[in-house]
Length: 181
Image (cartoon, rainbow, N blue to C red):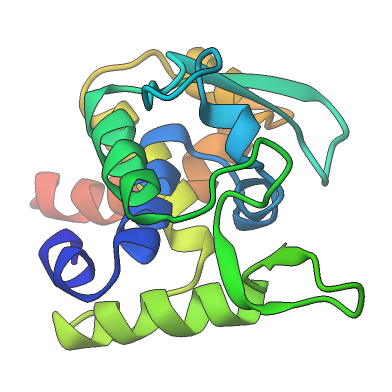
């Protein structure tokens, strides 16, 4: 999916890479501004090592480290933009609001662009929340403690996190395969 997005749109590729590497909800990603991801001022394009959002759903502050793939995707995308004012939306739409200001792409547009790419690589069931779940799932599979994943995703309990990332069903199915009577 990354390869497909990379050939289609630097913006959509950066959105996807940022989503799967931070676990942010799509609404929180679309609310980011250029200034939220830049480090310092000046002519040189430098991406910050971390980004902070106030989650729309929980109203909690959350800081995420921008790993190398996320920083590279953001740098590539921002280098293609003619305008990079700190107050501009990060994931900019071609459309402007009534006052002529730039605005972020909509959730629906983000879903359309990403689900088109998902279908192109054979993924039939894709939602913008899939990226957040992917983030949690891969952290779990890599051995990250469940309590840390729970905290990152702001879930109320480890059981909620397991269910959310699909591990509960996976474990149930494995128990059927492990026991032969």
